[in-house]
Length: 126
Image (tube, rainbow, N blue to C red):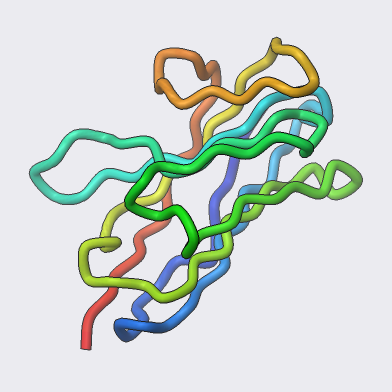
């Protein structure tokens, strides 16, 4: 399966962006999905995760209440709506997919994921 992120860009503090992760090659309707990010000079960190049913979501404390993860299994796509963006949200954002899991399970460790996208740059700056 291939994962392709899009929707990144330059935005002012307080602004919004919606990232998309389109999967091809296989359906991801039964796969748990996640978003991670990596800022310059820092390790990759967890941002958000969603179960394959879409009924369970989980967020890092740094984005809780500002970001929302969702999925459209008919479109084989996962989204990350990012609101109230801050300069510290600046990073390359990666989409990740996990092949197996229960319908209500989400995963927040990068080691739990099997496939990764190439990333999309998000820059928050005035």
